[in-house]
Length: 499
Image (tube, rainbow, N blue to C red):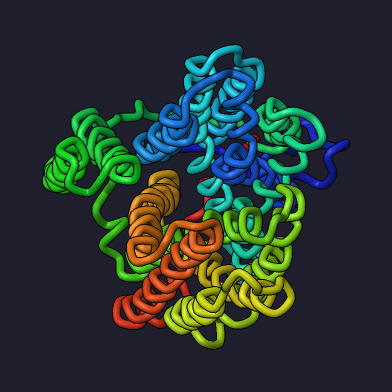
């Protein structure tokens, strides 16, 4: 299969069909991809703050509420590898545009929802089209920036967007819910999608096929079922227990299907996920980095949000603003580490050091109590977390697509998103269970008066922060052992066709 290069031209107003896809406008391409990535990433958290208002408006139960979040996670997590491979087979531009239009349409349905079922269906739709959009965006970036210095800068900026999207979602969700309506948490995606769609139509080259693409149907079915089982199993564990029969069935079933998938991929002529993608040590360690980060970052966003709102009495908007120093730290380290430090110290040291800095920040949060102040107990921790995780994430994004051929860029990009999504699902279930156990253990020997209940909540948060600290330290140790310390090679750019 041959595709035209996915790159830009001299200035937006000068673009025509001959110039579209040329190399000069690649930084405009990055801006378009960044907007699309931000839309997908912030949708994982922007809805959380709006959920109580949506629940009150549509009248669904606390038990049903989790499906607004889980519906998105299930569709997104289980279909990412398929979405990545489709972008390789049918063109990144086509897949990106279809994903944008579909995501916007599902968001419009969600904003207009007049029932719980309609809202959940819209969230599942967002997950389906997000699974097309996210790998296509990252693979477009991978094949557009192949010159090492430019690549480092581009991946740093993209990594900053991916890393800070969750925190920006908290702020945006609070602002829209408090100042407008929970429905605008969904409708705002139409603005993001419109900007990205116009940019994509103007900047990205059209796709040309010279041979019939082939899709690994057995592998697609098996891995989609496997990822669905794993993500649903962890979601079910959070709402029931780890020993619940359905939880165990989905987790063990998902793991067994994943093993079947690995065997299948060694035997089919056109594998969905060529094993060379994950067996390369730099790429494999990079996927592991994003996976560990997905587990640990859950503790920051969920439990620190609870602490600020419930223990400190912050409003949703004030909570979102309180996370901005972490965003700033991520932006600084994501843009500085890949271009300035990575060539000098190598990816092993960059990622391991990033995890250790983040672990110090997380350990700082374990000292929180009912009298803690923002400036002394939260601000320094958020800055350290932002600096550590931003550098590690941008390095991992670059390493995960290092040296891939253009035909594999989509599925390699999808593995990053899959690693992050599965890590987030594990973090949600594991840390929620640990937090709930810590709170009940604290109350088991005390009278459940208001002060004891408030202190039990803080105990649950700090226990989860200790676990997240240990997870980041373990991540640093694993990367120190597994990742080679050679600077990631660029991916292969798209073959250029004459216009």
